[in-house]
Length: 124
Image (cartoon, rainbow, N blue to C red; front, side, top):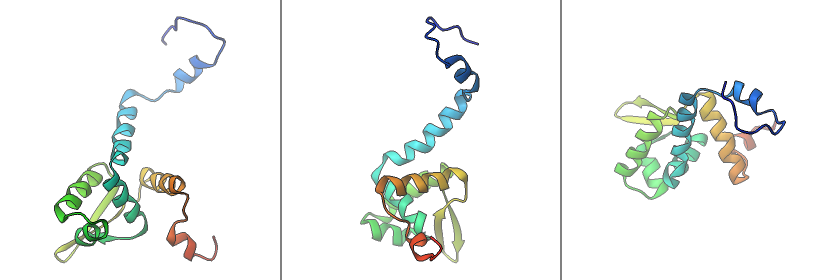
């Protein structure tokens, strides 16, 4: 355990004992870096609510297919979205992971909107 230069009668030692390894922080930073680009954030928001092909994503956002493909590749590499082949197209959707679901909730909270799929459900 690290010896800190000052003792402020805080609980920092017990907090440090529970601190995740540095690798975990690097992984989290990598996921959060995906949200640092407005186009990727739009794509992620769109895929939180629908499953789409690159052509529709590009048209919906007003970007080229190459730009949309580049951002989708980064989102796939980070594990936030996945793609399933249907004929000659790949349909992209939010990945079914805890991280992706948490980001969906965070994005919705940031925009203070209701998820369209939730508003359709009469139970909510």
